[in-house]
Image 1 (cartoon, helix red, strand yellow):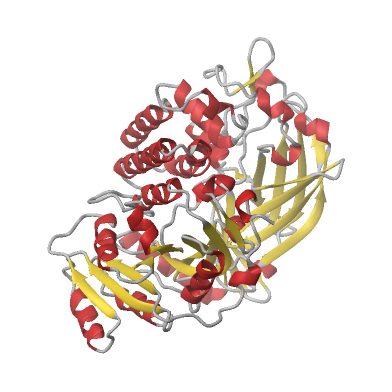
Image 2 (image 1 turned 60 degrees about the horizontal axis):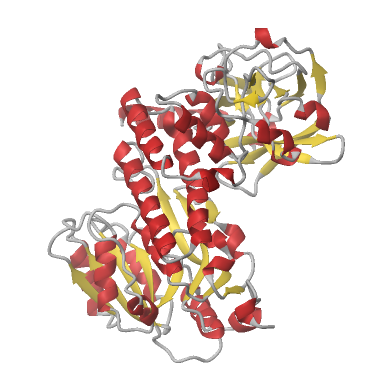
Length: 575
């Protein structure tokens, strides 16, 4: 098999074993600013990788919290650690990484942030793959670890399912979606030969541009399934990380600028497919993430965000929009472009959810063509008519109601321009997924979906997501409903926790569609309730709406659980 002529090549025989090799091959550049609480943990995780790490270059970006003193005391007993203190704070992550890169003397280099860690064996796995595949870049699995819960979510897991070699990045355009610089090992000479550096100064999302510069240089890339980086997500910190602090519109401005530069870098290098994929990734990932949160912002933010987004999307050409025109991100982008002012934010939020939900009302043009709305008829939804049912943005309402038989879950599936009736929905599987432990699932019964009377198009009401009222209809073909008891005892068994509702709708031909459910917000539907329990005494049940409009459920069993929820609520109020 000719590796240069094939898109990917299995490298299990090359990277699977960590055999004899010269020691001290890798430099780890650790950057930090005012992070005395975590920086030494990061450095120690790099030093603990073993003899393969020949040097750890810790670059302090002019901290004022004593970080440098901690690092210097550690370096006194660790000859592999070199501490560099910048004289002035750069305002970003790119400049200190460049400073560290300039100081590196090892054949390979990787990057580590002060509040994250390298898991044991990460460097050995990356180095073995680099040598076995003769690769300039090796990339492995990063996991996002939510703290303090410890819940771990893999980053771009589909890229790292198997050992593989990609001779040229254009042969696996999905690489554009992994914009992290920290889960990768780079050949130092490769970076220097191509002059690949990070943007300097205060430039948020510098790794987006750096990664584009790496891919533009067309390196030979090895991919490994090993966990090589643990990204700590601390949402309760007083100072949020750049990726979490999205409350100001300047964050969005910085993100769009980074994505614009990444596109220009790839296009300028002749990597047209990678450039197109970068634009598609912006629509499918970045745009949808911010739209889910747009309803949380004030009117001034929304107007500024809308204007910035319209200016950015105006640079897209016909080919960008023609690819997968029914994809949720493209529909959202076309609505933004079509309207000079913010509009339909609750409905856009539903479409930005994962999986996407296209919420009613379902409008049609004069000729019967499906369109976004009567106010924005220029955005056609015609591509939905040929989209497979397993990929349709189906909308399901969910509400929790107390009753004589316990807490009941009521579901209602909406029609979508006749596609649902055509597919024939038959059953729905109900599952509750634990927020902090993705492996913990409480499965409910398989419910039969029964058709219920529809309301004529003239009687269709507005989306309840922003109005607090229940939608009573979807389209002429009606809706389908199901109802079941919620097993609060099973949900309360692990203790205080949050559960996300997930559904699997099964159709007549055997096809299925995984969906989340839109939380109805009518009077009393999201009220906190204390439910008597023979086992726990009481169970506190709090249904609520997530940022994407989906139904979730907080459960706290027993008096101790109830008190813990009350104390947490008081802390949030005081904060």
